[in-house]
Length: 117
Length: 278
Image (cartoon, each protein chain N blue to C red):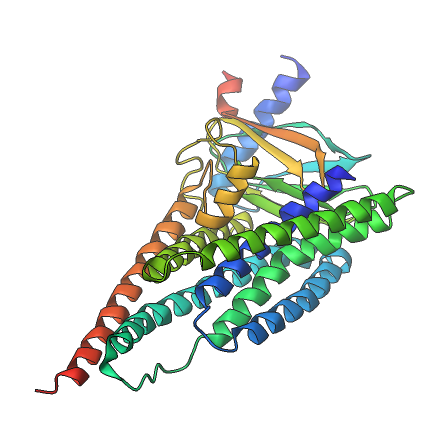
């Protein structure tokens, strides 16, 4: 079992349990660095509500926006914000920086448990 | 430079169209110009304060605070648009009774001038704060900034021109259709704003999503296209809405329509009762 599949299993387990235990919603991080989103393709488990931390490592403010997700939040330069995402159906969801439309990315939601099998 | 113009155009468009609609719809109300102008001024002031807060304050404000503020702004606009529309629907009946030569003393209660002020203020404040932040970012960012500032200014001017086009278009509507067309415009506009508010409250986990992607018409009409964005502002078009957005849209639409009908017909009966005191 490769390290990647293993970590997916752990993540999947963590997501599954967090729904029950709710010690704090699972969080993923999206960075803004050198006028790019990192990662540009953000994989996350479908069917689960989770926190998305958007961290701006650049000095310029950015506005994380997604019409697919109805999300819109200003991320100050050298700042970070946290929003909720989901529970999402499996599929692709575009997002972009409304202050710089060349910065784009995709959230790819897929069933987390399926990968384990 | 062109990219900057497009971004500023998009930021300014929503406020511009909203102001055009309320200015058009309230053309019968004396003194509305001053109230709308005051609303724009207060909105710009508020936008600057929000922009500073969003950029310097702790991450607590910049995440949850932004969303709560946006939701409050949008919902107060919805409330004020409702008041405006309900007032107008009753006023329209009294007016038409007067036109028929009945000679009623029109005492229409408090005119919705405060509503005009608040709607204008929050519309300017919401999109304006983002415009201010964006301009601030480019003004402090590098050698290209003079060109980009000119582009930004161009975008603002074009956005305002589109609003003026809509305003003068509304004024050309024949008088007999005017009330119904503008009140439908406001009804759809307010429903769309309520759906946006639901999106913000869901973003910070205060409301459940109730399913995402109730439908997905991104392929037919992308929300980021110009037509898609215009329809998003004017009638609340969402290409891929969540359940809670649909609920807020429908709820606002039905509530407002019911209030307009109820209040409008009540006033109508009162007028008739005054005319025929048998």
